[in-house]
Length: 218
Image 1 (spheres, rainbow, N blue to C red):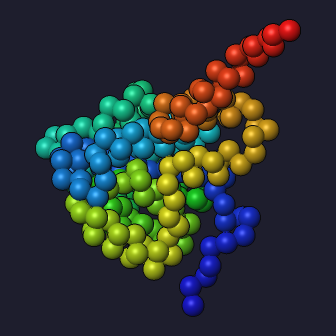
Image 2 (tube, rainbow, N blue to C red):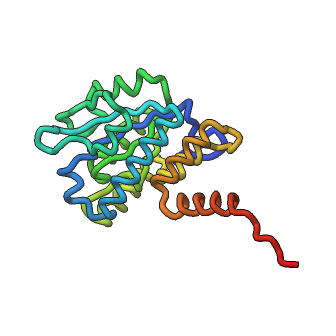
């Protein structure tokens, strides 16, 4: 019987998290059909910015970038000057340089997003789970060649023991308490830029709070 991932200790903590962003490259994006491509770019940038806001180490990796293209600038500009580990292995978790970079952080909660879900996300997730890692896949910062491919991959990874989340859920779990004021300010900025209606609603709320109440006649 699979061990259930539940209880307070199972929730994500920024001090225990390490993020790996895999193959968010032009070649892969060209055949993403499980999501609207712009949303994948938006959500991945948001996840990267949230990780930076919470001090979560982030490993960037590509596969044969000279042919598949460089990682989206919306990601690399969040971590200026950081090396992008370029691989030949399709399975990131078979690349010693990437695994060593993850292990060097001493973090235990491995968070993965990438293109494509059914290949470049599924392979390392399943291998890392078998090696005892606590793995979370960020489904909306990933994408596949079809809706079916994405959904089948998610079911396959759940069966292997992976945890599934979306980027805003990850960020909220890292925040956990709005009394963490410094992080709340940083997270609010990410929400304004990338969380669509939630960001607009927040701006509206600020507008209303700063709008004087009209004086009543008489």
